[in-house]
Image 1: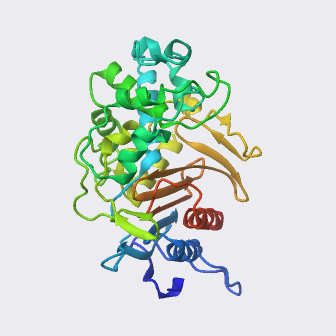
Image 2 (image 1 turned 135 degrees about the horizontal axis):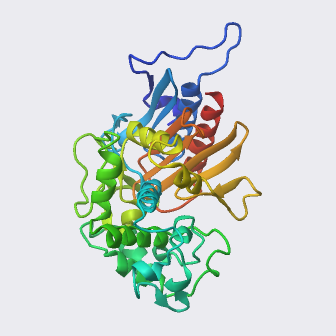
Image 3 (image 1 turned 90 degrees about the horizontal axis):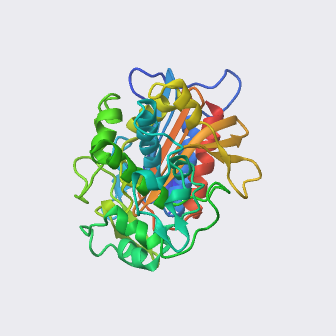
Length: 376
């Protein structure tokens, strides 16, 4: 099947005019650029892709492919999907708000809030700060790389299986540190599980309750949630797929505690765009915490083109610097890009992920998102 055989649409809300090319110049609109990449990504392996490009008053949505491969029902840009590691920005925001309130400090150690939680094989919570958790410089190993975790999560035979955060942390601690705390960036979901545990220790509430009361409710993100036990999705949602041996498996229901504060949130294009705009433009944090949010550390092997803040990544592109993040959990892959003032935004999501990074589909939609952003 060619990419042009797939169902594909561009749509615009009534309040936002469609973009037009400059007279005499056949320049594609941002949505047309994004749609072309979405078609290519769907042809390369994603069952479906949905996307949003906006720089108000311009705003357009794209869809390519299917909500569910088996039924060939067209994708819907308003559908919910699991956002994976894009959850990190929500968790980091709560920590920064707590610091602004004087409840904790980014320079507190993990041991101060979670006594004994990190103390094995050279991993030492007395030497790791909250800031180092949020910017992934703690040196803690990644629990999801362990067969103990992977064999259960990826096969998804037991979507209701609970994964208490400390259990996952302990899986990570079975290995020695990657490096000394603060030495360099190395992404590990372990960091954000611990950040979530600190939120709960500091507030007495679950991470889900804190994110809801501090972010979801104030921003009226009615289609976003933080599931804590139920692996099912309800209402209008993208069906999750995983490709194994060239065959699609349906994995919409999966173990939601497997990533928790590092990746459990369910959202939509609109809600994710609203949140990232509010965050980057300073609506959610005081000035000091906003500065901390955007203070970065270099990402190794990026040739200086990428640096990580607190739950967000800054990338140097042909269109200038852009804030972004990606998220991948079983069945779902997503990506957002936002300008420093929150005005220019591209958000994309796809309904296939088999826990492998750098697939052809991911690369195609990532490049399309960058190209569409550059055209805004």
